[in-house]
Image (cartoon, rainbow, N blue to C red):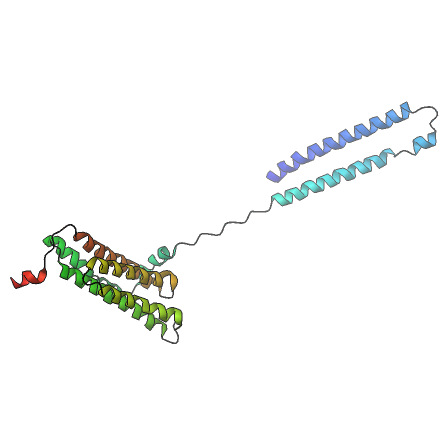
Length: 255
């Protein structure tokens, strides 16, 4: 229906143009014959372009104009390129695979959060800040950092592994244990030690998700959940240092 309406709309002006051009040529021809001076010879009048020739030239011009119009229509029919679909973010895509995690990995991972979560819960229940429990939580976080570095090292060693045992994989697997060792050095300043462990957990998560993306999707999703809970527990312990009064656990045990 659209092509029929478009054809009618463009053919009517062309017919009107042909009719107008025909009338103008006829008027000029009559005017030339009637107004020509007597001294003008008939041969010179007859040498002028005939009516048939003028109509042929006019039809040729109309055909060119129509062809130009058709070319414009062809150009208009070209469909614009469809934008490429945006790929979802890395974390969002991996979180969909969390349900595919093996049950032993989920249960052991959740059990590994108990030393992180139990420390701020005990302090909040007793409304007391225990430096010994805070140091135990930081030490456990340092051991988890060493475990994550060893997992990367062991993942790159098998022959059929997608991660090659090159400087990139093996070198980055050494970084989390070094951060863990550096955090233990701040045993007299637990706030600095906890911040160092939090930074180490963030660096290890960045390696596993973006910098070295060769782990399975379910493992990366599980790593996000476990790391967020561990970091939140350490931050809660840091907040409790200014909320509750400090008390030595060893002194209370002696009494």
